[in-house]
Length: 468
Ligand code: B12
Ligand code: SF4
Image (cartoon, rainbow, N blue to C red; front, side, top):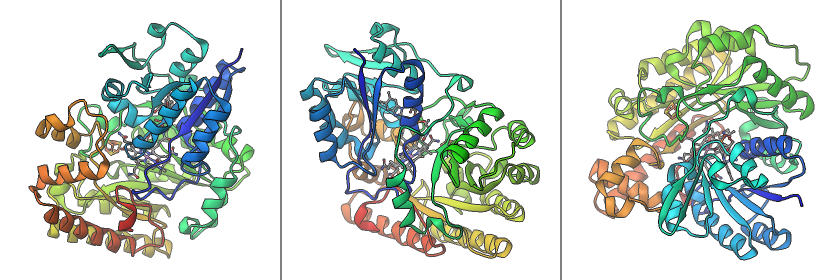
């Protein structure tokens, strides 16, 4: 009999401020669905997005009604409690519980060690793992699994997909209406109206981590970087625009400009696409050059999200965003603006070394970017964000928390984000008392509000819901 797999993007704990940009279905779950549909066409797959159209009650009700064979959840630190609740009900119904995604990958051992209701955690790419479980292959032959039996942790072989072999991205398994409704209600659609937003991925992983530990706050689990071919990039865009009628596409790859030759090739083979669309990407400031911008223009990139992180030289150094400085930030803004390309400047507040002076410099940097864009584009940037630092598991600052507080952190799967932030400020800033921590957090919030006041849309992360 064919199997039923429920793929759930777990709802977050509402004490935290949720992202606003739930304008598209979870790309990770879409990638898994596309792979299963190709290699196991008889499998029934339900995609349930707890960020948009399904509450916890809906999800639990669904489990009791449908009794899927496998419940796969894509989890985050701020959705972990809900993930365990869902897993508990799934276990009651007799489903196999599988967790995956970046957070699960970083916390795999601690999760399976502490939670016997979680049968398996998938570390990294989930495609072959899920397929193996659906096909009932022997567990030791299914890659990327971590599990615990009788207090012993087992790991199967690691496996990374060659991106040339992934199926063509296809969103037809999901209804777009709930996402489009959200989009209608926001200021993200300024200055250009957008009705259908979709995400694609041209690459996986961050090449900047190869010879370093990466930025201090970053919890990305992939090792190294893998790109799709330029032809695949355009196939994804063609399907998104012509089949799914997307008029805004965001490529979630961490650093689009990582390989200038790849970018040049993408520009060279650009096909004619009738449907009009905007294209957003992520890039690093230090890779923005006039040549690269010329290619971005040819490709049709309309805006670039750059993690400027801070306007303070010393804070940037401690952040370990190598080869970047306040000067590279301004230069990148100028060169992009010169090419008519918008910038979403993203800042992380509360980085190591942050103080009143560095916050002033960050706000000045934000204002400078607004001026540069306004001068060239005749309007301020569409978006700008002041995030609060999150010691994401797998990040260098999380590793330091592990060292500083081993009893609390070692092999522990569940420390709420806000408690972790408090420990971080204690460890890095010596803010031992609740008052001193809260007062610094308020100062950071003021800085975020000032940054947000410069533009009409901001989707900041890391904050509590009642702080905004
Ligand atoms: C787009 C994005 C978002 C979007 C959309 C999220 C969504 N619905 O998918 C928005 C803006 C809403 C968002 C929000 C947040 N995000 Co986000 N996001 C990303 C981003 C840029 C791309 C994710 C993506 O689509 N990748 C492409 C797909 C194909 O890859 P993938 O998601 O990794 O999925 C693969 C595997 O992980 C695995 N997999 C994933 N899920 C599952 C489930 C199962 C069952 C299995 C078997 C496998 C599996 O298989 C997939 C296919 O290979 C990543 C950074 C990045 N470049 O990846 C950050 C990232 C995932 N986000 C991150 C964070 C922290 C958050 C927030 C928690 C921040 C906050 N405090 O608000 C929120 C959570 C909000 C919420 N409601 O859940 C971190 C996670 C770090 C960590 N160690 O956990 C990342 C890695 C950014 C970073 N550099 O630190 N995010
Ligand atoms: S935050 Fe830094 S390490 Fe993480 S993906 Fe971006 S550039 Fe790479």
